[in-house]
Image 1 (cartoon, rainbow, N blue to C red):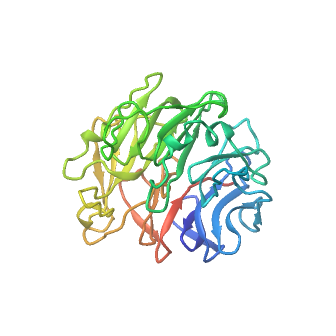
Image 2 (cartoon, rainbow, N blue to C red; image 1 turned 60 degrees about the vertical axis):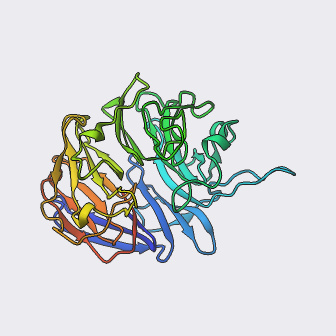
Amino acid sequence: MVGTRKGAFIYYGDASRSRWRLDGPHRLGEIVNHVVLDPRDGKTMLMAARAGHLGPTIFRSTDLARTWKEAAQPPAFRKAAAGENGRAVEYTFWLSPAHRDEHDTWYAGTSPPALFRSEDGGVTWRGVDGYNDHPMYSKWNPPGQGTPDGPVLSSVNVDPRDAAHVYMVTSDGGAFETHDKGESWRSLNRGVEANFLPDPYPEYGQDVHCMCLHPQKPDRLYQQNHCGIYRIDRPSDEWLRIGNNMPRQIGDIGFGIVLHPRDPDTAWVFPMDGTTVWPRTSPDGRPAVYRTSDAGAKWTRQDRGLPREHAWFTVKRQAFCADDCDPAGLYFGTTSGEVWMSPNEGRNWRCVASHLPHIYSVVAATVP
């Protein structure tokens, strides 16, 4: 499921993942930030879109994208009281199914950073007031900051052992967790650098690009940060910068991080040029994925089949993913409109789609 600046494109692969059939485009011309299939029923899809005349909204399909219907109540802030400054959702950036036992419950992250929940399969959405109206909200999300596309709440991870335990990250506050379904929150940023702030190791203020929890070892989380690659093993509250072990000439700056579906020690990143002027392109125009199989102690370059030179794209936060096959397949979409895949965990790559609009997200799922 590929979300782009001009619509969504869905590709169906055969059992060998060698041939791919296109379905779409869907909502052509509209900005699609995320398309996600609900693994709990295998047929419900949600799409986060910015539609021209509708504005920021959610579309829902219960028949594997054959038909779409707009949410009756998309994510939106409550109307401000007299004398208060109001907030408006610019767009929904992130969609995530909740705990496997919470059927029909979803989370959505927006810009400006806010968390919303739906308990009816994405038809109606309500704000998680414990975060959105938290007394620290304006300090966690200072106005006038954020990404070039605006500040975002960019990842939500639910502990598979406990539906009330949720992690989320934002582009100006860092990582946060709740143990009571969002009634209360605490920051989780110790050891993570924010070299763009006067205090480079603040309690909050980090820019987390992407964070992932491993489902088979849920006390282990990884994050790709504006300032490096990190790992944490709970109950520790201290992040370890495993990106320091990347090749120095490549660095550890990027947007996405992907975990192996069965091995919590294996992860992949797609580095970008993070030098002083921040080109946000493949380093030296030579794109590559880097893999660790020992939880970040060592990293190995994987570029067989990728362009050898003059490929100046990068891969955004949600545009890098894995499937659950054996061996695992890897997929990434580029800012130049290509989808690349590896059927063998990064050892070889091939382009399976090209000439698409600027790609924002790529999500893989197995369907019946």
